[in-house]
Length: 301
Image 1 (tube, rainbow, N blue to C red):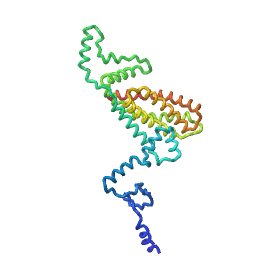
Image 2: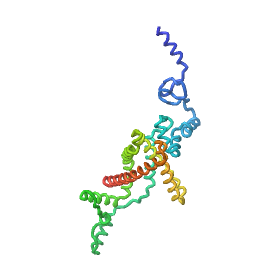
Image 3: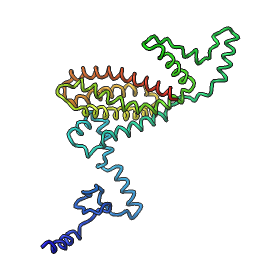
Image 4: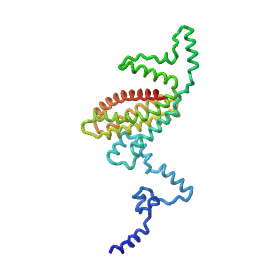
């Protein structure tokens, strides 16, 4: 009894449009199996250009929708993600990686640290002149790198600090490039640590660790985007650079505070207290992270 049904099924599907990518039947605009949009084969340059323009500017492009929400709506992307509305926006990690890569590439391209030539011949001459004059005969680099470190582990820390200072003094441009190369990696360790701290600030009601991490990922992506836009505007309007920097500072401060209120839905006073506590530990941990990254970069230079 099952034999006659096969030709009927084949006849029913004979006129159905099929996906050019996976050959699955298409009932609507997009293929339900692979997600490719049903569209005719490109036949002309005009059709290709119209198609490309639509892909870049059409309202269903997730890139522009995500960047607009990220820039002007603090905490919105995190709240949308946690509510399950994710298909219309770029994934958080991809968004962070793209903007952090663009940010550090921009920082490296606009880094105007001058290249320093080898200083060995000049230092030898200066050392000889100092000896004749009865001055300290040590190399200028050694004189500049004196350390009065009196903290713990002095026997181990003083040679380490001296080595870092020597490499930073002899090759500052190389150190700067290596520091910018290592900093994104350090951020990948820094953000999870800050998310763990936020777990302590938001014990009641209980929240998942990923919720804090998502907020930090989106907030840092916004910081990268705003700083790049601020740099660009500063290049276009050099006379107003100081006011622009002040505006960027206050906007980011408000943005980070507002994002905490939107995601956690707590009052202004309580959020402000947590914002100040988080900002203090963020500053301390950030300075420590930058210092360790700089030391690691100098030692591996």
